[in-house]
Image 1 (cartoon, helix red, strand yellow):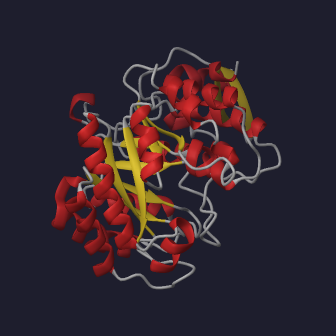
Image 2 (tube, rainbow, N blue to C red):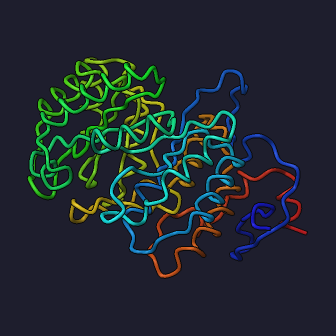
Length: 348
Protein backbone atom coordinates (compact mmCIF):
# COMPACT_ATOMS: atom_id res chain seq x y z
CA UNK A 1 0.00 0.00 0.00
CA UNK A 2 1.17 3.56 -0.72
CA UNK A 3 0.73 4.51 2.93
CA UNK A 4 3.34 1.91 3.81
CA UNK A 5 6.03 3.35 1.54
CA UNK A 6 8.89 5.83 1.88
CA UNK A 7 10.07 8.19 -0.84
CA UNK A 8 13.77 9.01 -1.08
CA UNK A 9 16.36 10.14 -3.59
CA UNK A 10 19.52 8.01 -3.67
CA UNK A 11 22.22 8.28 -6.33
CA UNK A 12 19.83 10.32 -8.48
CA UNK A 13 17.17 7.60 -8.49
CA UNK A 14 13.67 8.04 -7.01
CA UNK A 15 13.03 5.03 -4.78
CA UNK A 16 9.95 3.76 -3.00
CA UNK A 17 10.95 1.73 0.02
CA UNK A 18 8.97 -0.19 2.68
CA UNK A 19 8.19 1.97 5.66
CA UNK A 20 10.43 1.36 8.68
CA UNK A 21 9.33 2.12 12.21
CA UNK A 22 9.27 5.89 12.26
CA UNK A 23 9.62 8.70 14.73
CA UNK A 24 6.70 11.02 15.28
CA UNK A 25 8.26 13.77 13.15
CA UNK A 26 10.47 11.92 10.66
CA UNK A 27 11.79 15.01 8.87
CA UNK A 28 12.61 17.19 11.88
CA UNK A 29 16.32 17.82 12.40
CA UNK A 30 15.85 20.38 15.17
CA UNK A 31 18.03 20.05 18.29
CA UNK A 32 15.16 21.57 20.31
CA UNK A 33 13.56 19.07 22.74
CA UNK A 34 10.05 18.11 21.53
CA UNK A 35 8.35 19.60 24.59
CA UNK A 36 9.96 22.98 23.86
CA UNK A 37 9.38 23.03 20.10
CA UNK A 38 7.23 25.77 18.60
CA UNK A 39 4.11 24.38 16.92
CA UNK A 40 2.06 25.22 13.85
CA UNK A 41 -1.20 23.95 12.40
CA UNK A 42 -1.51 23.14 8.72
CA UNK A 43 -5.17 23.16 7.70
CA UNK A 44 -5.84 21.08 4.60
CA UNK A 45 -8.14 22.92 2.17
CA UNK A 46 -7.62 20.76 -0.91
CA UNK A 47 -11.01 19.09 -0.61
CA UNK A 48 -12.67 22.49 -1.01
CA UNK A 49 -10.38 25.15 -2.46
CA UNK A 50 -8.49 22.58 -4.49
CA UNK A 51 -11.33 20.53 -5.94
CA UNK A 52 -13.58 23.52 -6.71
CA UNK A 53 -10.94 24.73 -9.14
CA UNK A 54 -10.76 21.68 -11.38
CA UNK A 55 -13.34 20.27 -13.78
CA UNK A 56 -13.10 16.68 -12.58
CA UNK A 57 -15.59 15.54 -9.94
CA UNK A 58 -13.87 13.34 -7.36
CA UNK A 59 -16.11 10.62 -5.93
CA UNK A 60 -17.36 10.75 -2.36
CA UNK A 61 -15.54 7.49 -1.65
CA UNK A 62 -12.23 8.98 -2.75
CA UNK A 63 -12.82 12.12 -0.69
CA UNK A 64 -13.43 9.97 2.37
CA UNK A 65 -10.28 7.99 1.58
CA UNK A 66 -8.39 11.30 1.33
CA UNK A 67 -9.67 12.46 4.72
CA UNK A 68 -8.85 9.13 6.36
CA UNK A 69 -5.29 9.15 5.01
CA UNK A 70 -4.71 12.80 5.94
CA UNK A 71 -6.00 12.08 9.43
CA UNK A 72 -3.74 9.03 9.72
CA UNK A 73 -0.81 11.23 8.65
CA UNK A 74 -1.54 13.53 11.59
CA UNK A 75 -3.66 16.32 10.10
CA UNK A 76 -6.27 17.52 12.57
CA UNK A 77 -7.87 20.41 10.70
CA UNK A 78 -9.47 19.79 7.31
CA UNK A 79 -11.82 21.96 5.25
CA UNK A 80 -14.07 19.27 3.80
CA UNK A 81 -16.22 21.24 1.36
CA UNK A 82 -18.64 24.11 0.89
CA UNK A 83 -22.40 24.47 1.08
CA UNK A 84 -23.11 26.02 -2.31
CA UNK A 85 -25.73 24.98 -4.90
CA UNK A 86 -24.70 21.84 -6.76
CA UNK A 87 -25.45 23.52 -10.09
CA UNK A 88 -22.71 26.05 -9.36
CA UNK A 89 -20.07 23.69 -7.96
CA UNK A 90 -20.94 20.06 -8.68
CA UNK A 91 -17.47 19.15 -7.41
CA UNK A 92 -18.68 19.92 -3.86
CA UNK A 93 -22.25 18.62 -4.09
CA UNK A 94 -21.53 15.83 -1.57
CA UNK A 95 -20.24 18.11 1.21
CA UNK A 96 -22.92 16.91 3.65
CA UNK A 97 -21.85 13.27 3.26
CA UNK A 98 -18.15 14.11 3.46
CA UNK A 99 -18.71 16.22 6.58
CA UNK A 100 -20.72 13.44 8.23
CA UNK A 101 -17.78 11.09 7.80
CA UNK A 102 -15.23 13.64 9.00
CA UNK A 103 -17.27 14.08 12.18
CA UNK A 104 -16.64 10.43 13.07
CA UNK A 105 -12.86 10.95 13.40
CA UNK A 106 -11.91 11.83 17.01
CA UNK A 107 -10.17 15.16 17.42
CA UNK A 108 -10.61 16.25 13.80
CA UNK A 109 -11.75 19.86 13.31
CA UNK A 110 -13.97 19.63 10.23
CA UNK A 111 -14.63 23.00 8.61
CA UNK A 112 -16.78 24.11 5.69
CA UNK A 113 -16.94 27.28 3.64
CA UNK A 114 -20.36 28.98 3.73
CA UNK A 115 -20.91 31.89 1.32
CA UNK A 116 -24.30 32.93 2.72
CA UNK A 117 -26.98 32.51 5.39
CA UNK A 118 -28.46 29.41 3.77
CA UNK A 119 -25.07 27.71 3.73
CA UNK A 120 -24.62 28.59 7.38
CA UNK A 121 -27.95 26.96 8.20
CA UNK A 122 -26.69 23.73 6.64
CA UNK A 123 -23.36 23.93 8.47
CA UNK A 124 -25.12 24.37 11.81
CA UNK A 125 -27.66 21.66 11.07
CA UNK A 126 -24.93 19.15 10.27
CA UNK A 127 -22.63 20.10 13.13
CA UNK A 128 -19.56 21.51 11.36
CA UNK A 129 -16.88 22.44 13.87
CA UNK A 130 -16.06 25.63 12.01
CA UNK A 131 -17.66 27.61 9.21
CA UNK A 132 -15.58 30.01 7.16
CA UNK A 133 -17.49 32.97 5.73
CA UNK A 134 -15.51 34.54 2.88
CA UNK A 135 -15.35 38.29 2.39
CA UNK A 136 -13.37 39.90 -0.38
CA UNK A 137 -11.65 43.19 0.42
CA UNK A 138 -11.85 43.88 -3.32
CA UNK A 139 -15.27 45.36 -4.12
CA UNK A 140 -15.11 44.02 -7.70
CA UNK A 141 -14.18 40.50 -6.63
CA UNK A 142 -16.82 40.53 -3.89
CA UNK A 143 -19.55 41.26 -6.43
CA UNK A 144 -18.22 38.65 -8.87
CA UNK A 145 -17.76 35.92 -6.26
CA UNK A 146 -20.58 36.54 -3.76
CA UNK A 147 -22.87 39.06 -5.49
CA UNK A 148 -22.60 41.23 -2.40
CA UNK A 149 -20.51 44.22 -1.43
CA UNK A 150 -18.00 43.66 1.38
CA UNK A 151 -20.19 45.52 3.86
CA UNK A 152 -23.20 43.42 2.87
CA UNK A 153 -21.13 40.36 3.73
CA UNK A 154 -20.38 41.86 7.15
CA UNK A 155 -24.13 42.28 7.71
CA UNK A 156 -24.65 38.64 6.69
CA UNK A 157 -22.09 37.54 9.28
CA UNK A 158 -24.10 39.37 11.95
CA UNK A 159 -27.23 37.45 10.92
CA UNK A 160 -25.33 34.16 10.98
CA UNK A 161 -23.94 34.92 14.44
CA UNK A 162 -27.48 35.53 15.71
CA UNK A 163 -28.59 32.24 14.14
CA UNK A 164 -25.65 30.37 15.69
CA UNK A 165 -26.28 31.78 19.14
CA UNK A 166 -30.03 31.13 18.99
CA UNK A 167 -29.39 27.48 18.01
CA UNK A 168 -27.04 26.87 20.93
CA UNK A 169 -24.46 25.53 18.50
CA UNK A 170 -20.76 25.61 19.34
CA UNK A 171 -19.72 25.94 15.69
CA UNK A 172 -17.06 28.64 15.32
CA UNK A 173 -17.38 31.42 12.75
CA UNK A 174 -14.24 32.50 10.90
CA UNK A 175 -14.38 35.56 8.68
CA UNK A 176 -11.99 35.00 5.81
CA UNK A 177 -10.76 38.26 4.26
CA UNK A 178 -9.72 37.45 0.70
CA UNK A 179 -7.84 39.49 -1.95
CA UNK A 180 -6.04 41.10 0.99
CA UNK A 181 -3.00 41.91 -1.13
CA UNK A 182 -4.65 42.91 -4.39
CA UNK A 183 -7.03 41.59 -7.02
CA UNK A 184 -6.89 40.71 -10.71
CA UNK A 185 -10.29 42.37 -11.23
CA UNK A 186 -9.81 45.58 -9.23
CA UNK A 187 -6.06 45.92 -8.90
CA UNK A 188 -4.94 47.59 -5.72
CA UNK A 189 -6.65 46.87 -2.40
CA UNK A 190 -5.62 49.24 0.38
CA UNK A 191 -4.31 47.92 3.67
CA UNK A 192 -6.64 50.29 5.49
CA UNK A 193 -9.67 48.70 3.81
CA UNK A 194 -8.46 45.21 4.68
CA UNK A 195 -8.00 46.19 8.31
CA UNK A 196 -11.38 47.97 8.44
CA UNK A 197 -13.22 44.93 7.11
CA UNK A 198 -11.33 42.56 9.40
CA UNK A 199 -12.35 44.63 12.42
CA UNK A 200 -15.93 44.89 11.10
CA UNK A 201 -16.20 41.09 10.83
CA UNK A 202 -15.20 40.67 14.46
CA UNK A 203 -17.57 43.42 15.57
CA UNK A 204 -20.37 41.69 13.63
CA UNK A 205 -19.84 38.46 15.52
CA UNK A 206 -17.12 36.42 13.85
CA UNK A 207 -15.14 34.49 16.46
CA UNK A 208 -11.93 34.97 14.53
CA UNK A 209 -10.59 36.11 11.16
CA UNK A 210 -8.05 35.04 8.56
CA UNK A 211 -6.26 36.82 5.72
CA UNK A 212 -5.90 35.39 2.23
CA UNK A 213 -3.73 36.27 -0.75
CA UNK A 214 -6.35 34.98 -3.18
CA UNK A 215 -4.48 35.75 -6.40
CA UNK A 216 -0.85 35.41 -5.36
CA UNK A 217 0.10 39.10 -5.32
CA UNK A 218 1.74 39.06 -1.89
CA UNK A 219 5.46 39.20 -1.16
CA UNK A 220 7.25 38.67 2.17
CA UNK A 221 7.62 42.39 2.86
CA UNK A 222 3.94 43.15 2.28
CA UNK A 223 2.97 40.08 4.32
CA UNK A 224 5.12 41.19 7.26
CA UNK A 225 3.65 44.69 7.08
CA UNK A 226 -0.04 43.75 6.80
CA UNK A 227 0.03 40.86 9.25
CA UNK A 228 1.99 43.02 11.69
CA UNK A 229 -0.69 45.71 11.53
CA UNK A 230 -3.49 43.15 11.73
CA UNK A 231 -1.97 41.44 14.77
CA UNK A 232 -1.56 44.80 16.47
CA UNK A 233 -5.25 45.50 15.81
CA UNK A 234 -6.88 42.18 16.77
CA UNK A 235 -4.16 40.03 18.33
CA UNK A 236 -4.70 36.27 18.34
CA UNK A 237 -8.14 36.61 16.79
CA UNK A 238 -6.23 36.72 13.51
CA UNK A 239 -6.10 32.96 13.37
CA UNK A 240 -4.90 31.85 9.94
CA UNK A 241 -3.00 32.79 6.78
CA UNK A 242 -3.95 31.56 3.31
CA UNK A 243 -1.43 31.92 0.49
CA UNK A 244 -1.32 30.97 -3.17
CA UNK A 245 1.94 30.13 -4.90
CA UNK A 246 0.93 31.75 -8.18
CA UNK A 247 4.24 33.62 -8.49
CA UNK A 248 6.46 31.26 -6.53
CA UNK A 249 6.44 33.15 -3.23
CA UNK A 250 3.98 31.05 -1.26
CA UNK A 251 6.41 29.50 1.22
CA UNK A 252 8.36 32.74 1.62
CA UNK A 253 5.07 34.43 2.50
CA UNK A 254 4.26 31.71 5.01
CA UNK A 255 7.61 32.31 6.67
CA UNK A 256 6.94 36.06 6.85
CA UNK A 257 3.53 35.42 8.45
CA UNK A 258 5.12 32.95 10.88
CA UNK A 259 7.62 35.63 11.87
CA UNK A 260 4.67 37.96 12.46
CA UNK A 261 3.16 35.47 14.92
CA UNK A 262 0.77 33.40 12.79
CA UNK A 263 0.72 29.69 13.63
CA UNK A 264 -2.07 28.31 11.40
CA UNK A 265 -1.75 28.04 7.62
CA UNK A 266 -4.04 26.79 4.87
CA UNK A 267 -2.53 24.50 2.24
CA UNK A 268 -3.59 22.11 -0.53
CA UNK A 269 -2.15 18.69 -1.17
CA UNK A 270 -0.29 18.77 -4.50
CA UNK A 271 -0.77 22.55 -4.65
CA UNK A 272 -4.12 22.45 -6.39
CA UNK A 273 -6.57 25.30 -5.95
CA UNK A 274 -7.61 28.73 -7.07
CA UNK A 275 -10.76 30.81 -7.41
CA UNK A 276 -13.26 30.53 -10.29
CA UNK A 277 -13.95 34.29 -10.05
CA UNK A 278 -10.34 35.46 -9.82
CA UNK A 279 -8.59 35.04 -13.19
CA UNK A 280 -5.02 33.90 -12.78
CA UNK A 281 -5.47 32.60 -9.24
CA UNK A 282 -3.74 29.25 -9.26
CA UNK A 283 -2.05 26.85 -6.93
CA UNK A 284 -2.37 27.07 -3.16
CA UNK A 285 0.73 26.55 -1.04
CA UNK A 286 1.51 22.84 -1.28
CA UNK A 287 0.72 20.93 1.93
CA UNK A 288 3.63 18.52 1.75
CA UNK A 289 6.16 21.27 0.93
CA UNK A 290 4.85 23.45 3.76
CA UNK A 291 4.95 20.66 6.34
CA UNK A 292 8.48 19.77 5.25
CA UNK A 293 9.65 23.38 5.54
CA UNK A 294 8.13 23.86 8.99
CA UNK A 295 9.56 20.61 10.32
CA UNK A 296 13.02 21.45 8.95
CA UNK A 297 12.74 24.77 10.80
CA UNK A 298 12.10 22.88 14.02
CA UNK A 299 8.41 23.75 14.06
CA UNK A 300 6.29 20.77 15.10
CA UNK A 301 3.21 20.10 12.95
CA UNK A 302 2.36 16.59 14.15
CA UNK A 303 2.18 15.53 10.49
CA UNK A 304 4.12 12.73 8.81
CA UNK A 305 5.36 14.22 5.55
CA UNK A 306 6.19 10.79 4.13
CA UNK A 307 2.56 9.75 4.57
CA UNK A 308 1.54 12.95 2.80
CA UNK A 309 3.75 12.06 -0.17
CA UNK A 310 2.11 8.65 -0.34
CA UNK A 311 -1.34 10.27 -0.19
CA UNK A 312 -0.34 12.71 -2.91
CA UNK A 313 0.48 9.77 -5.18
CA UNK A 314 -2.99 8.33 -4.61
CA UNK A 315 -4.74 11.66 -5.18
CA UNK A 316 -2.71 12.21 -8.37
CA UNK A 317 -4.22 9.00 -9.68
CA UNK A 318 -7.73 10.35 -9.09
CA UNK A 319 -6.85 13.64 -10.82
CA UNK A 320 -5.30 12.22 -13.96
CA UNK A 321 -4.70 14.98 -16.50
CA UNK A 322 -4.91 17.81 -13.96
CA UNK A 323 -1.91 20.07 -13.29
CA UNK A 324 -0.34 19.38 -9.91
CA UNK A 325 2.31 21.41 -8.13
CA UNK A 326 5.01 21.12 -5.48
CA UNK A 327 8.69 20.26 -5.37
CA UNK A 328 9.22 17.75 -2.56
CA UNK A 329 7.53 14.97 -4.50
CA UNK A 330 10.05 15.49 -7.31
CA UNK A 331 13.18 15.81 -5.18
CA UNK A 332 12.28 13.40 -2.38
CA UNK A 333 13.47 13.72 1.19
CA UNK A 334 17.12 14.66 1.58
CA UNK A 335 19.31 11.97 3.11
CA UNK A 336 19.92 14.02 6.25
CA UNK A 337 16.17 14.33 6.88
CA UNK A 338 15.44 10.61 6.80
CA UNK A 339 15.56 8.24 9.79
CA UNK A 340 18.76 6.22 10.12
CA UNK A 341 16.98 2.98 9.25
CA UNK A 342 15.82 4.57 5.98
CA UNK A 343 19.33 5.75 5.10
CA UNK A 344 20.61 2.24 5.70
CA UNK A 345 17.92 0.78 3.44
CA UNK A 346 18.71 3.31 0.71
CA UNK A 347 22.41 2.41 0.70
CA UNK A 348 21.90 -1.34 0.92
